[in-house]
Amino acid sequence: MTGSTPDVLSESEVLSRLRSKRGQTGYRAMFSSWLGGIVTDPALMQIPLDDHLVHRGHGVFDTCTLSDGRLYRLGIHVDRLLQSASLARIEHSWTKEDIIQMVVDTASKTGIRDGAVRYWLSVGPGGFSPSPRECPEACFYCVIFDPMPLGVTDSDPLSAGIPEVTVRDTPMKPQLLATIKSNNYLLNVLTHMEAIDLGGTFGILVDDDGYVAESCVLNAVFITKDHTLRTPPFDGILFGTTVRRVMDLASEVLIEEGLISSVDQSPVLASDVSGDQVTEMFLCGGDTHLYPVVSWDGLAVGDGKVGPIAKRLLELLEGEAFGQLLGNPTDFIDVNYKD
Ligand SMILES: Cc1ncc(COP(=O)(O)O)c(C=O)c1O
Image 1: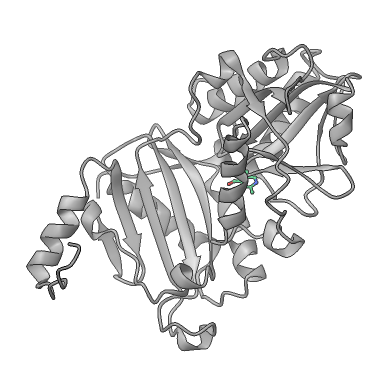
Image 2: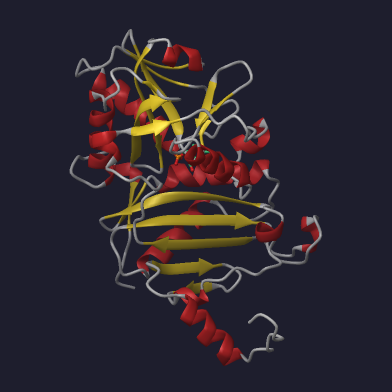
């Protein structure tokens, strides 16, 4: 390529080059409201460059889990998507039911019963100015792909746990941005990268007053010495769906089992973790991901081992999402693969 002028490509050359760039991606189906349909060829899973989602980050997204042919907790995620869209001032005419239907329809064309689901609501294509006024049509995109690990860890996080570090050079998002699940994830990515550089995994953000905020794409949960499951308030962090389920399961199951005595959402001082006030710490997100933190900035958390509460909660989260335990029937939407 160096030194030669790039060719103007024909339609068929574009298609063949797009295909040659895509091997076994595991991307099964994509819906695009811009195209008005679903594509199953990964080479065709494209978003227009002039969509403000791409060059302005003026879009929001959310996720859910396809588990044994059912979409797990899609409604809760779509509620958050709509809340994010409203805060991001994205004007569109889709209702919660419309969005659920677009995701269900996409899933029905994947041919897989287990997968990861991502979808975006954007102001749409229209030009390269900062103004969404040039975008005539809000867009919805949804992609469903084979399950993939959330982060890169060398060993099984549940048996070994993960080391964590405080991220100091990457600033925290301002409150508005932190509470919108938007396409502005540069600071989240830099948080993760700084953590890896320092020997951590996802990174822990601590505010100027010393209180724990969250991790790059996960919420933080602590078990205190007096057996309380505690997580920071949602004021300046993402309204995590998994941590909310963790709090429910802790209240419904763990108290009954005598593993904890109470659940609360209140500020957590980072110094309390190093100061022996905490027996367990873990990060959670993405419906079924839970990472026990066994060390923080080189100091052991609790006894430095994966604790019983993290183990039990992961068992409950996975059991519910993957169907061995019943879960709440309203949290599941069946996908009809026949049409
Ligand atoms: C910044 C941030 N915090 C927390 C979470 C966890 O949210 P959830 O449990 O809904 O996946 C995410 C998820 O992507 C996130 O991006």
